[in-house]
Image (tube, rainbow, N blue to C red; front, side, top):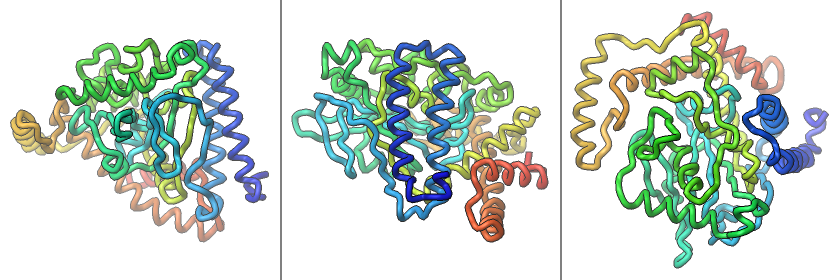
Length: 385
């Protein structure tokens, strides 16, 4: 109904935001590892998000603000105003990168989502200077400026904040700031490698989600009340090819459903949103092939050069520099990553033409399920996997 009368879109977006807040408030008493609870919150929150985004994409993007506010959760942490959003020290930034591997992280889950990266913001209370603590595949845990964070391609960003009515925050309103401060000083003290295995029980290495979860755990807050599961054999096989060993873990997308956190704001615009949906559709169609037993096979003759590059990377890593093969990634995993990117780009190049053809014939953008169909047909017709 809203799709046929877009004048009500802003009202619908506000309705979804209020429903999400209500669901998250109620679900604090749920067992988030119970399948019924998990499916309920996924249908309501992810389902509502999917409906909102289809409506945004069918409307003139210039008429929709890229910034949508959620709940202004009270906080005593130091704050800054960034692009119209009041950010607090200890806020968690959940985002989506523009690489095919980002789409794989977002969709390769029992509950496919829209996010692939987690970061923590720390604001120095003495000078109000903001820092972003995050973990990159290429270089492990880093402390970045806000500009560096934003310049690293982001298709969307969501701001999550610890709820003020929890027992821990009621006792100490500065917990989020203390968490961010601890994470900042730990990251500044020495090199912390990236955790390709996704082992949440070992904090000597950290993948992006662990940057937030390990720091909050130090102060008695266990994030990801519902752990992520990767039970699909095909998806697990592909991810193990990238070094993943633990398939009950903390996926970025699942943090949105944690009842302990409120959504303070979310940024997305029409152009990047459609790219996000295109990338998701391609990866989803590729993962269907993974379930059929197809692998990310690379040409055998590329392995010796990849091993040489790995050796070179290991040497320059000793001097604090970044090589062509990331620290902790095997030559085989690096080749699979390149294979994934090459396959994704081949499908996208054809899909761009198919999308224009669809729009010319139908008069509207293809919705997500049609994008998946287009990607599936291209892969099958061209025998790409």
